[in-house]
Amino acid sequence: MSGMLESTRLVDEILRTDHVDWETTLIVGDVEFHRSKDGPFPDHQLRISVRPSAGFAALNYMDNHDREMPIANSFNPKRPLPEVNLIFNGTTGAVFPRAAAIPIPDARAALIEWLNTRKRPTCIEWRPYDSY
Image 1: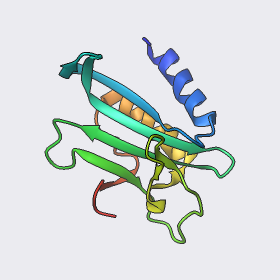
Image 2 (image 1 turned 60 degrees about the vertical axis):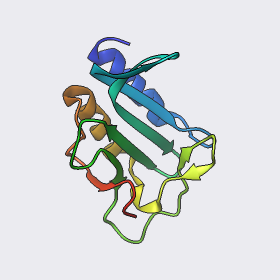
Image 3 (image 1 turned 90 degrees about the vertical axis):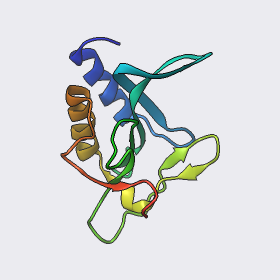
Image 4 (image 1 turned 180 degrees about the vertical axis):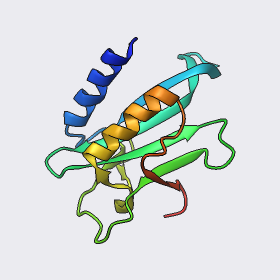
């Protein structure tokens, strides 16, 4: 995929997709982090799960060069927490913590910021992956 217009269209398609059984993983980077038999792996990854009918999405960000928070989940400080299970890993059936569920427009803003900066978006709150 090349170009911001095409990338934005992809983001919008992802946000309209009901992620019942599988998450979407987006990978972008200027630097190859490692290579396997499956090819090169860039140094930034965003995993996203969306439930359009509920109005929520959850993000997981990984940056192998970020010493402060290399793996983080989106964080929703509002209470009560949304009653939605967002799939984290379709292979294992794991779900995001409910505190990771953020409104879809906030997830879109974060994805667009990530495409532009290739860094953990600052327009939403984050928590370390293992701190919930």
